[in-house]
Length: 113
Image 1 (cartoon, one colour):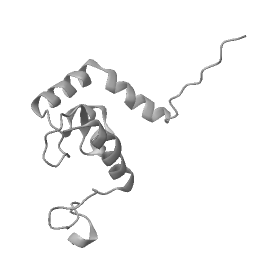
Image 2 (cartoon, one colour):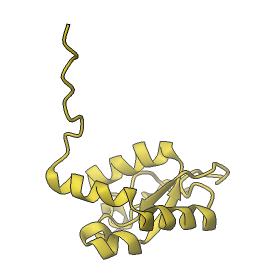
Image 3 (cartoon, helix red, strand yellow):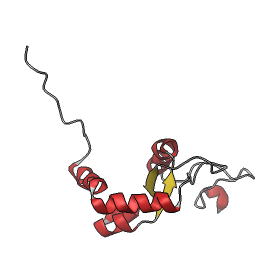
């Protein structure tokens, strides 16, 4: 029996794949390590006691150029917040959640205008 043929599992666009290669560079690995060293706790965990393991680009537009990709700004997040909350915020286009008074955290939310 022949071995099964494996497909490329990365279904992202060619442009997205080009950016993904930057995550494997020495420069990124050093930038990430420095961010997590300087800010070792998740910025989104309320009491901030969860160790961070992801260096997240705060502003997705900062990744518009290769230089911006490495320049930041960054925030340290736990994997749960990066993979769930931040991804949802990027897709929706606004910050999710409310402050202690119940007002939306996003300054551009229509309630904050």
